[in-house]
Amino acid sequence: RGLLESAGMIRSEQVDDSDVIIINTCAVRENAEDKVYGEIGNLKCLKRKNKKLILGICGCMVEQPEILKKVMDTFPEVNLFFGTHEVPQLYDLLYEAITTGERIVSIESKAGEVIEELPACRLNRYKAFVNIIYGCNKFCTYCIVPYTRGKERSRKFDEVIKECKTLVDAGYQEITLLGQNVNAYGKDLDEGHDFADLMEAVAKLGIPRLRFTTSHPWDFSSKMIDVIAKYPNIMKFIHLPVQSGSNEVLRKMGRRYDRERYLNLVKEMREKIPGLSLSTDIIVGFPNESEEEFQDTLSLVDIVKYEAAFTFIYSPRRGTPAAALKDNVDYKEKSKRFQELVKHLEVSISEDAKRYIGGTYKVLVDGISKTDNNMLSGYTETNKLVHFKGDVSLVGKIVKVKILESHTYSMLGELVSE
Ligand code: 5AD
Ligand code: SF4
Image (cartoon, rainbow, N blue to C red):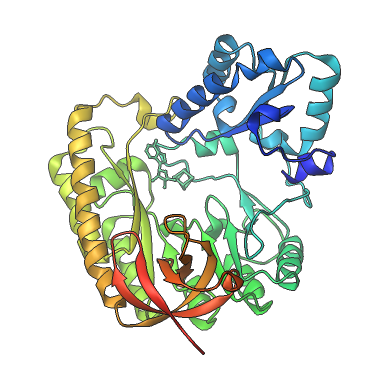
């Protein structure tokens, strides 16, 4: 958005009025890709009405050669293709597509350098995401990310601080530091700063809420835990993907930790950070996962007591080592396990959420509730969605809300006056 605006374009409210449409894509799982085919199918007729329409597709999906070929063959209407590493060249690519009228394909297989200060356009005036590291070197055996996003490249320490300072000065209430694995921040630079240093420096800028995602359990350092514990403005909420509770599956996934090490890390975190809330990612149905191994995941979930979880059925990604494995578990069984895990989590998350009832929590007000026009909604420090009655002037402010009811995915509360 920022790049397009700096190229003089303005956002159209109706997709039918657009001269440029760019679909950004994800390749992590197949169902995300399927949605893109459907979306192109819906949009391609616009090309008949507007011959000059640039219909572009970018992101990880088209970085896979066989998928790129499939989209190019199936949809002659799509006339611009570029990968994640070509985003900084968007202006030139568009210019070329517009002036030549030809189909432009720009996909580098290698990750480029980090380009600082790309124009950004932030829709939210209170919450901002700041990239700190791109790519991933972990090569978990099921994951396409290291192939599409390339090796780990950190942004310069001073550049991140400069961007965060600008956000603080502009009145932002929350910053989330982003990366496939933020813990690896700085390892590829010669600057002598690691992620704990960066987090501390951003916290010291005085942003009211600081978050970060995602952290791989393998390189979550004690130094990071100490920094989180020390600064009240670093939210006591950690997303710590476990993927599986079975040592055998974790080994086959190439996750570099076992169940015991993961649980020890959680223990250290809980000891040092009172009130800590944890969330996770879990994959069900990794090739040849046995019922017993699946049960290990359920038991780990019970031990850790996550407050939120993203759950996925394993999706084979071409070119990854896991996709080459023969699998003796059918999809029906995987789906059954998936449903069981989701139910299991819902019960434990809603049970746990009851402890919020009667308590008063700080909520950053996001806006008018999506489900009820008369209500506002926002998030607690531990990322619980809360609905409550209040004036729209509170949007973007941190207020105190007393929790009256808790449900699986949200809570109901009332404003507490200062
Ligand atoms: N199949 C299913 N889930 C996957 N993830 C990554 N790759 C796959 C895959 N091939 C999940 C992991 C990761 C999250 C972002 O997506 O749980 O943490
Ligand atoms: Fe993929 Fe995350 Fe593993 Fe990197 S650490 S390979 S992004 S699952």
